[in-house]
Length: 171
Image (cartoon, rainbow, N blue to C red; front, side, top):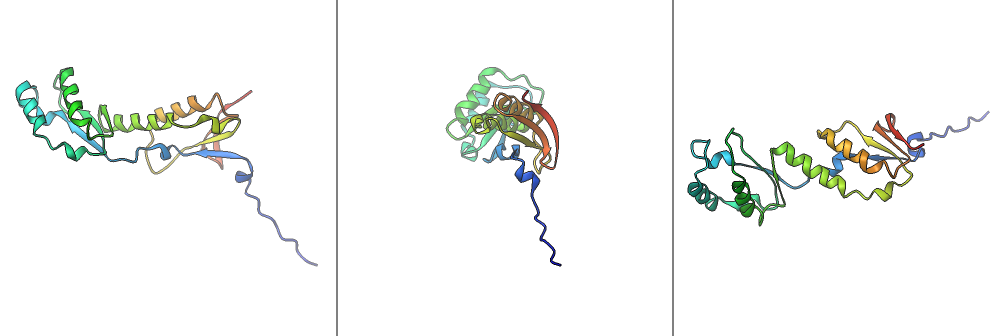
C-alpha cells in the first residue's frame, strides 16, 4: 500500500495578510545632533556677537546629507532668533532639521516617511502591523499608521502573522 504525500500548506501565506514593518520607514540617512550648549557663554547665556562668530567659524560640512536635531542640553533660555540663525547655516547642508533631541528627530522623520505610504495599495486588505523588531519604534508611529490605514483596509492587526492582536475590523 502506497502512502500519499502530505501537502504542507502555509496558512499564513494563503490568508492574504499583508505585513507592514514600521522599521522599513525608519530614517536611513545619518543622524546628527547640534547642541547649542557648546556656543553659550559659560554654558548658559547667548552673547550675540560671540554666538554669531562661533556659528560663522563652525565646519558645517560635517552636516552634509544628514538629518539634524537642534537642541540645547542645558537649561539655558534660547531666543527664537538663535534657532533661526542656526537654520540658515544648516539648511544648505542638512537633509532635515528638527528642533529637539535625537529621539524627536527620529520620530519626526519616521512619521514623515509613514505619511508617504500609498494607502490605496491597502484598499480592502487585511494588514498586520509588525510588532517586535530590531529597532525601537515610537508608539506614535503605530498610532499614525493605524489612523492612515483604517479608512482603506478591511482589518488591522498587531503582532506577527502567526499571533496577532485584532485592532480594527470593518463592519
